[in-house]
Image 1: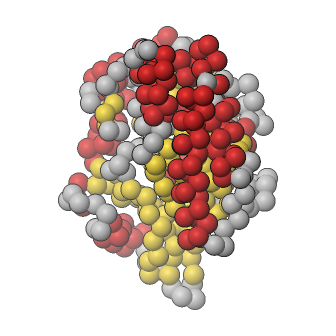
Image 2: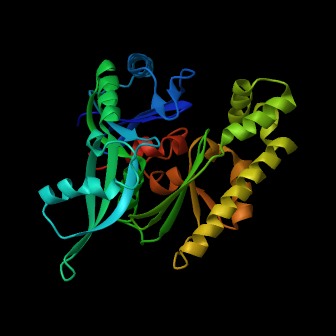
Length: 327
């Protein structure tokens, strides 16, 4: 079967998963060139395309088609209830479901959907709707063309998670999920009931807050401090400064979880599944588990690990893996 490349372009790192026949053939996580991504937006299509092409070449990733995770503040996902209608009518009416969220012209966006449920008696339908700027889609295609790739799928992060959950629940009982993406600029908490997306909370805190503290205590700049943190240079993750920073992050997460438990009183959230660069920091995971009084597990191990246990940095690759599902 043909190779397919899953791509997740982050602020700090580029994550690639090469799959064939439903199996991971190879995966790569590399540092992004400095300032190439700002506020979730690639500032140079030419540079990004060339960087992607060179990364594939250097790591022996051979593919002609790719699936891309769409991220950023201008990518919207909503659950909406609509009257029962045809696909043509749905696509016509869908933009109006975002008019209270999108401040730009609706005509500048591409809209898509997945039908979650249909109630024939009530003549209604539950829809997971997505909106992505046209310019972001055009930019993504241009970047991939520069790298010698054809874009065959592009979808928001929620859709990548949803696809993984649906595959997981083909052999497991339905449950509630809280997926924590422990990123550099922010921490994202996505909540699902089975494969039904419920809500997202984004905390304006991330590993950068630990970098700042570590940089001051070790007398280095924050870029070097980040490298020290990820590699646990001189066991810096065990320092009092880092542990206090991890606790501060965990307390913020506890407050968000308390709000969720109050507003969603019928939920059965009893585990946290983590991914992202911070998922591989044991003391951060321990702090989260302690403050939330919940066990913390690797999302990669839960969703994917039974088939691909030997993949390095799996928790950083979860989104790139999820976007490859159902292609």
